[in-house]
Image (cartoon, rainbow, N blue to C red; front, top):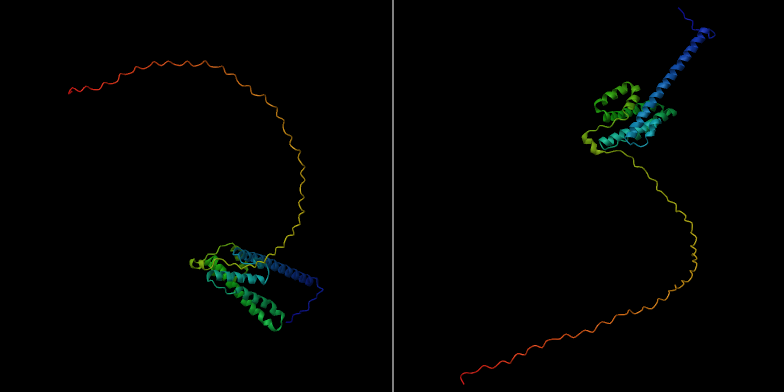
Length: 257
């Protein structure tokens, strides 16, 4: 039994089938692109809010490919500093791996590095995700991590739902690290000297001479007339009655003579 694989392209049935298959592929491709855009928006928004709520520098990197791996590493370093007081530099490691995964296919010699770099980047990504899950919901951190590995499509929605959750830390880990803040460089301010326009010399004000004060004329007062005092009657001398003179005392008589 033989089969004839020579299709007649001029056959209308073949042409309609080819057009139907092409339209189906285009619709499927558009659907995949739409799903990818929705997942990227939810994942980037969740990562942005997580970094912003924890005062991690440059949260806008969540919207940029490759840079979002660096930001995810910063979140992992944040929790290492908060729980253990040590930084493992996940941000630098993940940035180098992401650059290697993109740049390796360009070169023919290093093309084999791409799958290994992609696997290593996924491992570090899930390590940082686990640190986040463990601090916001310690009871279900392992379950959320396993579901995110088995069903990667739910990971952006999990980040979006947990974006505003507060960290729950053990009591012994709280005093070790208060808050991660990258020191900001302050550019020295240069103050340009202000030019002060010279002021015109003050002109002396002319004071008009005042007219001499005219002496006020005082009308002469009439002389004071002496007041007439009526002469008093002469005082009559008062007559004093002469006092009687007492007789001199007689000496006592001596009877012995």
